[in-house]
Image (cartoon, rainbow, N blue to C red; front, side, top):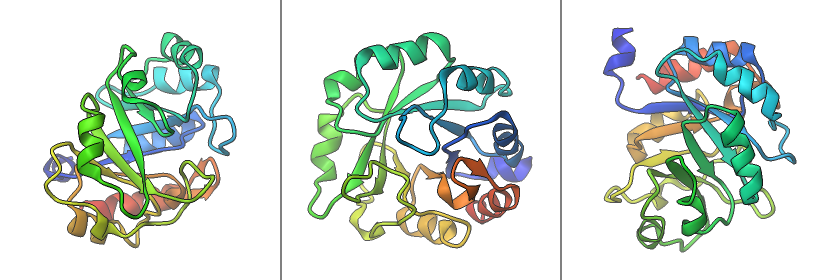
Length: 210
């Protein structure tokens, strides 16, 4: 417990689809779980299942709902039925749209060459953090590939959540190099898409706590 309290970098484990995996994440000492409300994703979770997963979470575990270019009604339906703490917008949503719901939000940015993160943080001024993920044409996230971490400046005003291809083998180096507020992992701790692996979660958390 003391080791977890001393850790500076937060950890979010995304793509939770069932209660067993959620419990494993909670037991690991991670700070947040991510629920994917994007039907094309192999990690998509139905509202009823998500409702039960979140209802069973212990105190102080943050629940994050991920959407990709969802309509207002879809987002509102989830927020009305599931006790979500933070929204993660992972598509081309405008700043106005992201800020128009009754929850704080994170804006995911796919790291293309030449992207100006200083301009983006000014555009999404209400975002609590920027989540930086790998760009791959036609795939909004969950690529399993990392991007060039040198693209991340160290003087952004907003907290940075680092995602994209992280696993137990590279998370310590990622944290040392980028010094993010948090790291976000999904495929890197899976046994198969949508199913987490206890040993991979444990290894990831150990190396994130270096």
